[in-house]
Image (cartoon, rainbow, N blue to C red; front, side):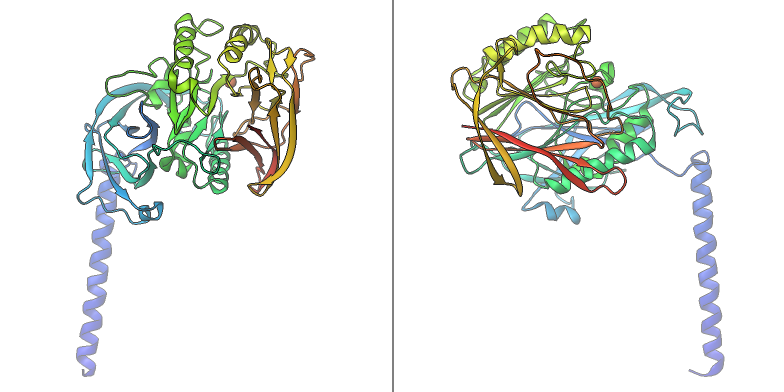
Length: 471
Ligand SMILES: [Fe+2]
């Protein structure tokens, strides 16, 4: 190539480069103008996967888009391992269509997004929901949600195995709660706590959130921070418990039941994972204690063969019926305690996992309305890399109920508020400097709770307590 043709090639290259840059600038400016000065953002957010009635074969999907998206689809396909989700390929995937509805809510006024006392403005969002059934038990799937044109990133879900728990084999799950906050800063901390939890328990079968997701249920931006900032939530099946903060909007963010709407429509429901029975109560459906309808449903639920024959019976509840701080002597808690303690004992519930008081609490195994220690022997073993204290109730017929509060996973830790309540048989009652999460490991002969704090500055974890019940 001579000197002149080299020069011509260089000029051509520069001209082409400039033309491409001008073209790209035109596209960007046009795109911004078209969207009223904001970049296009109508992709799915608040994507939450929940159980249908049968955790082995059904899943429910819900998400939001800003107004305008008129279809709801889930695409999903089987994979051998979670690693396959890194490069999803939806060619030939199953597709299920669901419903679309408008949700009238509120968002903070522009410029006030990071204020706890923001002026709120009306916003109409589009809510999407899809019920998927016919899934294979014990199978991992990759999925995405969207309207057929705009899709979410890929996520992963697992269905429950059909097997029962055995002495050597079971499952683990995560427990978080009280992530409540207003601002991006509040939920950045929650997202990091949840990230630490998933690192601690990467094979978690599902995540229980014990309620109080947000401070103001009418703030859709806070919900968006809460449900979208923790990236790993997209690949977790969530078991949401209704807290007092979400109240009416609980069922707007979590899709419970099935297409036929069998259960969950009042915010209380139950499910069996392997042969462990979980009863999820809603402490917000009555005037103070549980409504008569919920109490009747709960009794029927705990009398089913699935509950009676379960390896373990676990109750998940937001307002702690049994604790010794902050809310322990609130009038509605006194009523809930009087209403539920005899029921939990009568139905041989093993453990009640509770929240609302924002500290760490574990009771003795109690019976006779919480006034008598059922008694146990204990041993300390090394398990899961921790020193684990195992309690074995002395009387297998009347073994008592453990009440357990792993603590809040958000910005609010209570620093005082101890109530002088000798009638509450507390084994541990600890104020916490930092947010917490809990990993629960279940086999046929043990149910164990490993609780950790997460440092709010460097997100390192520290053990609070590891305890379990053994048979
Ligand atoms: Fe609460």
